Image (cartoon, rainbow over all chains, first blue to last red; front, top):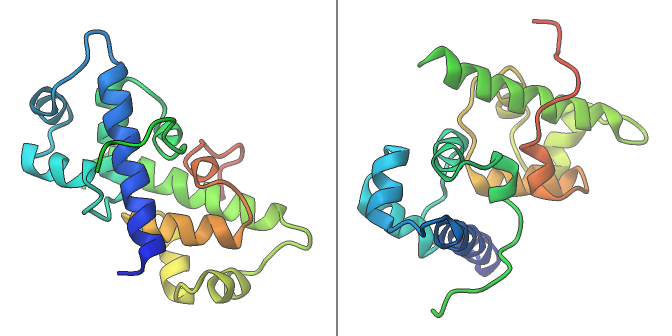
Length: 82
Length: 82
């Protein structure tokens, strides 16, 4: 996979993580996985930028995070450590 | 596939079509497929709401339409005929 593609997936993962932690109270990966219906391991892969996630799962995450799906494709304001 | 999922894919397809036709000059499906690197038949499927498109292809479409990827996940302002 091209570096630019990896960067796009990582930016999406950072954005999911950022929005997850901005919830009140902040959500754990387990909780977000439960609410969104996605597998916890899959969510972990998404946040690490290892998944080319499709639109229906983007909608599921948005619903669980109580935001418009478009907001998930905005660039993260913070980058995670890795 | 659930009706609500079909509706989400159709909304995305309508949004792509709407933005494609709002370009100056409006782009044909052939031209958008060429510029984005996606197959013309795949793009037709996307606009008909038959594809659960993944994020890297959303980025390719956004680049070809010269917009931010998030704008592609905004609801369409017009619904296509079907």
